[in-house]
Length: 274
Image 1 (cartoon, rainbow, N blue to C red):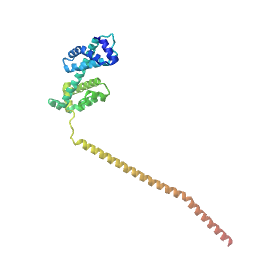
Image 2: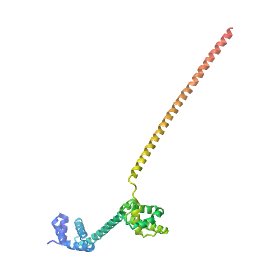
Image 3: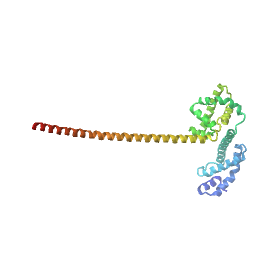
């Protein structure tokens, strides 16, 4: 039988699948068992980790050194893959729990909301711009941290920290106003009650009013433009007439002057003859 290095090299160089299948058969128990321990006995997650490890082995077959013991490489790869899978699964579960809280607010928040509602907007207004945005996105608009981080232009971890700090600032200010709530209760109250559904027809009414106002404004602008154009044409006509009259005035004066000269000449000649 070939050793692990020979089988791996044959698969890497020739794409010989039976060689890789043999490697899987040899080491799958080791990988699965290590994965199962590190994912706290979650058999489905352990299977996913095992599949990830052997997929990585196939992808990196050419780069694994012939001097490296494959068993050791597989064990380390399993540890890394399992740790990553646990983190991913934990984040998924947290998101699911948060979604449940957002969609089904606890009835126990009613009393908290009665205290919180009168001073909430003043408290939010005390936050800095970025903290305010973080609180509004996370708890008022009920966005996941990934969406919050995208809106704020930061990493998901940075967004999580900013939301936490902003919530704590908000809680401290509210405490000073006599509203004493733990951070978790405050977050739940905000998520469940800060934003209420508007009447169903209101959005359509507002849109119709805005569009009608825009049309009226446009019509008014058109009317003003037409008036301006009419006035401009009238002024241009008057100016042209004035130019014509002005241009004709010297001719009339000259004609009247010429007639006067003729009459004076005739009178002079008649007087001389007499």
